[in-house]
Image 1 (cartoon, one colour):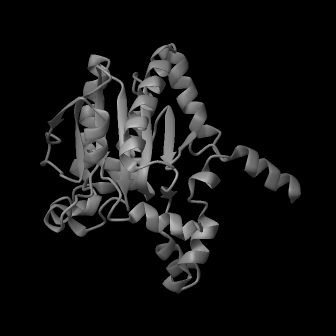
Image 2 (cartoon, one colour):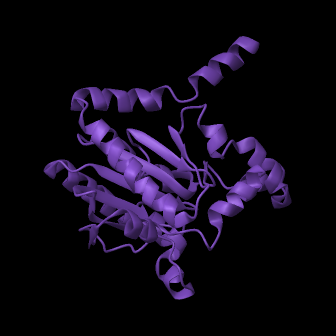
Image 3 (cartoon, rainbow, N blue to C red):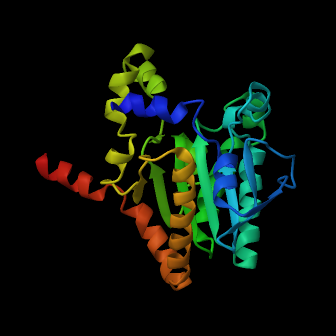
Length: 266
């Protein structure tokens, strides 16, 4: 399967949404609403769930299933109040000692005028800053499309996993092709160069594990829930100061081996 084929698979209308993952993984889930500043953004869903009996704060981007639901949720492209809601719930999780699980499937943050007027860039930047210092374990999973800062705003985590047919990139192949080749038709070439597949991101340290999709998605979602429980338990066993230092070093060291190799070749 080519790189752009992976992008199409990540975007597929048949792919489970964040709420479908929640239903398969959690025995209970109570949604919480609002950012306490402007309103509630349906493109990001968050609340408290039970993972094998463990209380966790769970947050996901939600694209919607029906046409009406997709429009209501803005096709999973969040406004700043969505990211502020997510951060509010993360700070709440820190207060009560709950681990945080984030599921990501978005083409990117909404880039409309109203989102910029309400501080889209600042909202994303605040998430990046605050997630780095949260004193609870954080696990993020790219379940479908992970687009730009809209995805990264939920992906500053101790562990980042990615489903086999996911895509994670700073820009879409079409957007990259339009900038570099002045032709969106070069999207397949752009996808090859963006290193957006799980297989290419794993050696760079951008992600830590690939979740295989060699079973029906119902089984994949249930398996993911079991793996997340094990990973959260592992992270909870680590001294919190050591965990924060490891989180910091994780992002500081991304791609350094490849950069060093390139420097040596020069």
